[in-house]
Length: 78
Image 1 (cartoon, rainbow, N blue to C red):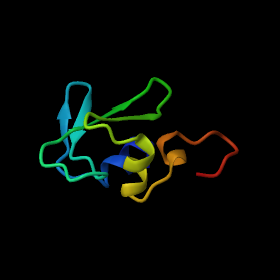
Image 2 (image 1 turned 180 degrees about the horizontal axis):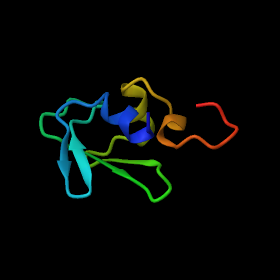
Image 3 (image 1 turned 30 degrees about the vertical axis):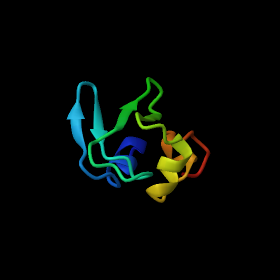
Image 4 (image 1 turned 45 degrees about the vertical axis):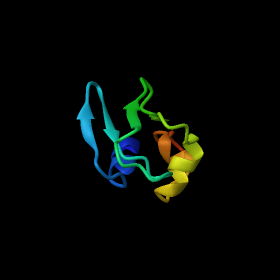
């Protein structure tokens, strides 16, 4: 499973938006999707809460770690 697949599997109200996605931020009471999700050129997941939640809070709220945002490097366990 790719990092973006891991993240998207845990988000509510997600929908395609341009080259990325938008979703409800799980780190705060979000009535309108304020979380932007994208993928960097190296495969890492890019998260931005337009209400100001730190990325670490968003990741923790969905039960993942910051490490889960990055693709596996050969020789490193996922």
